[in-house]
Length: 415
Image (cartoon, rainbow, N blue to C red):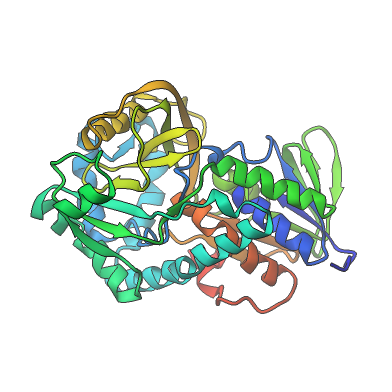
């Protein structure tokens, strides 16, 4: 590692920012990782711990958006929009519908698949590098269905995976019982995704990554960005407490809060927050080896080091509204339907902000306006999945190496 003399500020210490900071430090940059909170305490703390390589398909595909009116009318639907937030959401939603055109969908599917093809091996390599290889499960994920109708409703998902060559196996009733005896007998078929692994503790993944970064000489600071200084290129970042941080480069990867920062630079991003909830059950009374999703019920269950984590559904209510933990209770109720012996004891509830772009594909890009500024945001529910790959690709982009994937489709000015 040779010190290049360049100073890079990485703003946002979630799993994406930590991966980018670590990669840049390895490449010889002087790197300062800045966040208003401790590393990993945002969405990275409470995600569903899944390296979900099969979940890249656009949310704007017709099989999804046709269900949205029904979901919105159902108090326990997979998508909830708080009425007071609807006017602010309308421009985003119109872009979401625009991303549902057939030709556009094919492009978006290919862009997501290109990242997810790399996600598992890149994650395995990074975990090995930071001494955490054992934190990744060897088992995959089971997608559950009761009958032909539920399976048919999810058929487009399977067809996309087949088109891009992602591994999966359709299982019948007996095979499901052999893998996970705790799953209810109502489930008569499932799809096994063997490469959808899970982490014992996603928060620990971030903290170990940051510890490795600091061990290489990187710096971590707590602070809230107030503004930027720029001339012909970026020059410095000013924090709310008055601190001035001189910089040759700035990487904005503050998750759902990145849009506020990009707006200060005159480069708005149509970024929303898909508020996600989880319930951590420390005493579940059962043991499962695979993570479980039930598409028709819109929830996921993941075995973690701290018990069983249950999450799912989407709430659109912005960054400021207080949590509505009824959303977490809905998914727990559905998890009990899938796992009838599950006991819900010693629980904690959490809400976090997933950064969502209307076309589902992240931004990984140099600024279109200001030299020295870069963006990595909008990873949606795949932040943990994409982190190792995003860190590597952004490291290549920022240091002038040709990225291993063409990043043009992920540019900031594509909207």
